[in-house]
Length: 382
Image 1: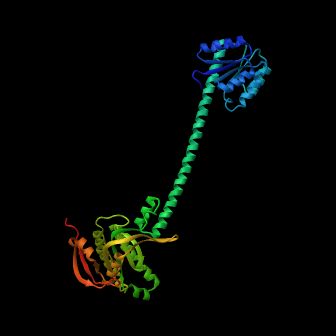
Image 2: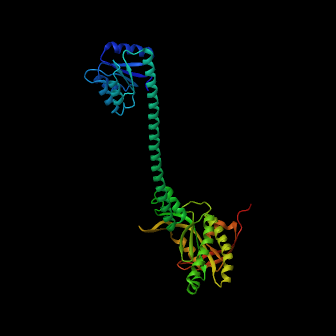
Image 3: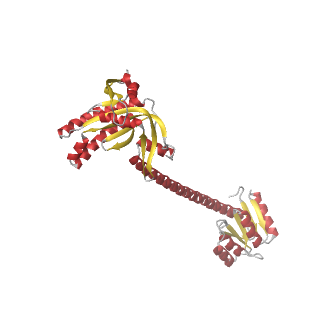
């Protein structure tokens, strides 16, 4: 609705148009006039009035023809039309109403009747406008809801893809590395080769090879499952990065990919916790006649770290002297022993009870190297 309401009066008699204009403007309406059917139709399409007063008998294009055209126009279909006829000819009125007219007046018309019909039709127009507005709003809301649904579907699909990607990454990469790759969106930079000082822990079971040769496959896998599960809890708790499994051997790295200022302390503390945890399982294994022990080696130093492999299969790896040193210390450890290098002891000496073992010969190293056994973790004074 316009404010004030806009009324189009169409009549080929100028005197009639002037009377309509004066009466309607006196009651606060905006009035536009047209002198014949063609002009009235053009102005209706141009101005989109709220009400049309339409004379039936006009040259060029009669009122009934104009009504038919108005009701075929989507923009004007809901605009009410009051037909004005010079005589009470039932046929004109019926034909006009059948063509789509909403009401009629007979000339000469009485002033109050004119205003009453105008107000009635404008109320109808206001109601139609409200319904149309609500319909448009509902259509817009439905379209917006459809957009939200499509957006939600895309988001869910992306999240499912991300979850699947994360699951695949965690099958082949340490959890911390997989998390960083997903967070960064592109793991290429993260997995590029780099050097960093790290602490490497290597641990494995004593007597596992002989056990695997004589035990049933189900027993072997059951022991490995228990072993990996209890050690995995300690790795997560101490913030280590599981670099790889080597049969019954496990390699854990501290200070990459997540930096950790006290990485050697965490590594040694974890090793002691691992030994205590395995002690509980060892008792159960002995009752099953499984002769298994547990040894750990820990070394500290700079290593080359990054991705190795090929397109279909890649691993995160720590390469250099440090992991080899940790592996050889582990190899030399007896059951329940934790052997560490000089640099490891230097970083935790005040936090542990340790026994020097002197210079030991390690496979793959040209000269003997000092080694120490960690007896007990003391921790920082409270």
